[in-house]
Length: 82
Image 1 (cartoon, rainbow, N blue to C red):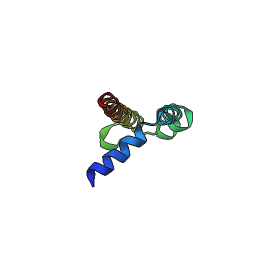
Image 2 (cartoon, one colour; image 1 turned 180 degrees about the vertical axis):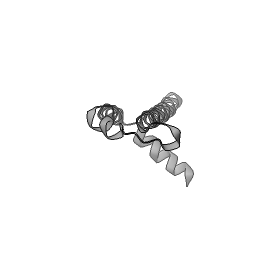
Image 3 (cartoon, rainbow, N blue to C red; image 1 turned 120 degrees about the horizontal axis):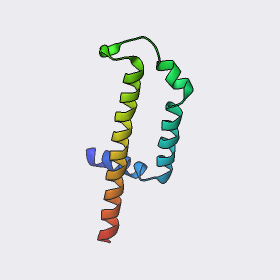
Image 4 (cartoon, rainbow, N blue to C red; image 1 turned 120 degrees about the vertical axis):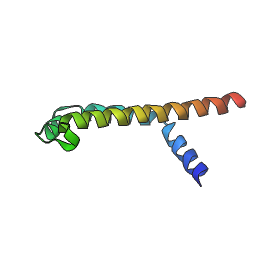
């Protein structure tokens, strides 16, 4: 079950269009409407809300790049075997 799930996710991540979608999503999330929504004097976990938003976005982008690179590496390994 897990192996099939991982293979399905890896196939989706291999799409080159997905890179473009993530890039555009990142650009949208770093522009005016979203930044103004999170620029509030609220302190969840003792951090300003805007900082928490930026740190969370940074963490998600790093995880996404990691998953993309793993999928690309597996694709290259399969291609080299054949």
